[in-house]
Length: 564
Image (cartoon, rainbow, N blue to C red):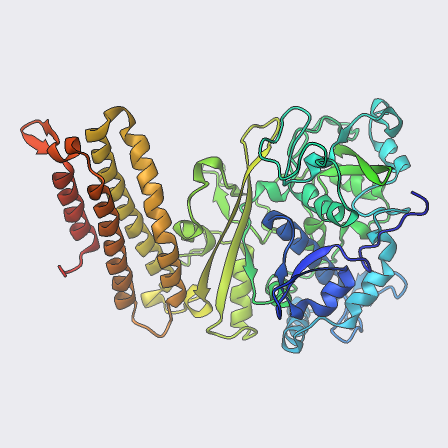
């Protein structure tokens, strides 16, 4: 390719949905930020791709608006180099609270204006050469000389070793040389063909959701294991808005804790500077760096307009108490008391988001419980009166679930889920009838009914075939929870802080009872003569009728409703 160019700032590569006609468009970075209010959402190849790109876009916005006001002028307490647009020094006498107040003011002005300002375009134009897939600063890659400088000589570009195929970088396929993707959306002939626009999207996604099959690593004085991508090790959660602009704003944690200089990957003086920092395996201290974290040093050679991708592992910082990450749920090690990001696993693949409500929301108001930072941020926006008291918030979870194999971490499923809840309910200040705790109690009650239903199905299975009764019960219970998902989410979204708690909870209890009875009737209707006749258990006959009666009794006991 002679003098190739594909600049992401001006050439279309980002997929979005137009909010007016619901049609998909492909736009450039500058177009996206100028017209974000006119797009409903990102519309990439996968939900995980949209999440990776959302964080990339947020890194740009965090960098720009942590330095410049909406009108494009630098903050008075900050020195900004007019040539590089980089923040160089902070007024040592600045009050952190005053800084946060001004950052909140910037957020509020943007939100009220309903669009981003010209300073974002100016920033992108300033760094345009870093957003070109080709050239001296290839996007999310390094040059040949830089790559060879950090990998072992036997893996230099000239050797042709250390490559990953396009079909592996494309996470719709995720096919390595050792494992064939049986349900690929592309035939073998086209698996390694890709457009420049798609390649740009997948480069960002791959850096975030890399597995561990790569054998090449950069040279370091201490050994390290090839890491998975940072986002791959989270159970992500973020806020979704009615437009792309609103989604970006709700997740734009501009006044997140204390002020720090933002430093995305493209602002490092050199790749050597970046890698020297990464070799220390220290957690980033700013979100722009975290959102643009690389898991691989990558270089692309071009042959007949198609890429040959070289990839080398980079040491990854550990996740111990990494509370700088706002988009994840957390779990605590019971022995060390250290908090780590939670992960979605195969065993919990079918567990809906609402069933883990307590992971997303601090249900008891305790400081010992770490809710996702993005939820705390939304709470701060409400406290600052920056979003309406009765805003219906959409918390969305997108996860890539791996095969659990430490040597491959191949993706086996993408999970996309969400729940809508009123801001006044989510951040209820009435401690006497605290909604989050009441919701958590209601979910626990619902799961008790789920256990009752599992026992009902297991008893039916014991009559049918004792050797497969548990498998039958698991299958039936999964279907039961599938039936609960939509009505429970609708109930959750209907809650208001202006209503009495008990009547609303009883409304769900009655709905739950009807679903259980309807589900059990379906099982009863398909009963065989053997199940109707039953079997003798001790001195009692156990059949579908006695098992169903037991379920009804448990419903009455656990729900505590008056007979209808």
